[in-house]
Amino acid sequence: MLAAGFLAGPGTLPGQASNHLAAPTQILDPRTDVTDLYAFTSPDRPDTVTVIWNHLPFELPDTPLPWYRFATQGFYDLHFDNTGDGRPELTYRWRYHDGRPDLREQPPQSYRLEVLQPGRGLEVLLADAPVGPYPVEDPVEDTVGAGFAVEWKRAVVPLPGGGQTFSGQVRDPYAEFRVLAGGTPFNVHSIAVQLPKTELALNGDVGRNPVVGIWATSSRRSLDLRDAAARPYRQVSREGSAMFGDGLLPQPLRDAYQNVSSPHTDHAWAELRAAVHHPLVSRTLATGLPPKEPRIDLEQVFLTGIAEATGPIRIDLNAHLLNRDADPARIVPAEMTRLNMTTPVTARPDPYGLAGGDPQGWPNGRRLTDNVTVAFTRLARGEPVGGGAPPAAWLSPAKGVTGFPYEAAPELRRQP
Image 1 (cartoon, rainbow, N blue to C red):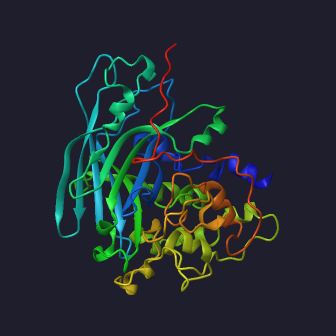
Image 2 (cartoon, rainbow, N blue to C red):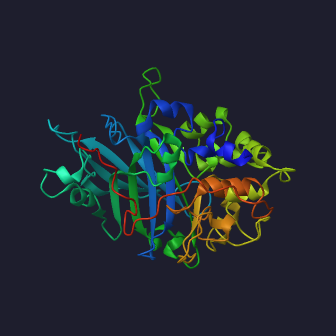
């Protein structure tokens, strides 16, 4: 009962099932709110990695609002770190803009996709790629001609040199989150990209350097006219590993985490590390004595990655220390999603990932079918290094969709 109440109640909210408006200021800017980040080996293209991150939570299909769109006064970044220093070796940047208004529906959107690498400047991969269509009505009554589903799939765009990307509205993968809303389905805006593993691995060698760190940020144009030295854009959202912001961070730290923090400075942020080592959630969920602190196991999950050498979770899973070409002296504790790109894709994934005995699932990346709420609850209570029975899995992700972008088309507004 305690665990179930914790999942559904206010406060420190794994019951949000994901990072939906985890920080106070995100309520004012949902278009840039990164709600969830997923990263996994593509099941149908195992030489690639798929990363998905979603924005604009709680979109109601029967009440389409004009701000159900990507922000145009800023950009969305996806960062990859293969050395473990908390700084990106590779960043993909999406910049969105609105098209000509149509009296019948919302103006279409398109985007420019750029890639940035230290010392190499900026490269434009896509100059004017389409965003998926806005779902005006049920496709049974569709008068567009090609049909909504066909138009939606056209938003899957190939990338130069391999890979593909998608931007548009989708059904929220955490579909059973509707349990908390009386059966109401939700949509969300999604960015997805599928990239060759050799592009992400250190020195392009996946075998020697299997681990890559991943996080997403959103930035808005700065409106600070008082400071002439102010940067033209400022970070307004950050998402790394699932359940970190809303599962471990105290409320007073969440805006700072979202707005001014970066993985390369996490190791020097004493309050952040204390939130991991001495989490309130563990004491809240414990049915008996809480796990022994400091929680080095949670430090492995969120800040260093898991390796036998770092313990107490003694398996070589997703720490940057496993990259043979990485300099151990440069590796620092940093919050991000870490993915071992050589972990085989399992035919029978366990929704609780590592806590359920499945090393391919969270916190080794995150699949769309991973139940991070229950998995985090089990880890917080001491698993896999401790014990305890899992709470009832009444809150479950939707089943996966075959083929990129692996998310379902959005719920559509029904004709009256």
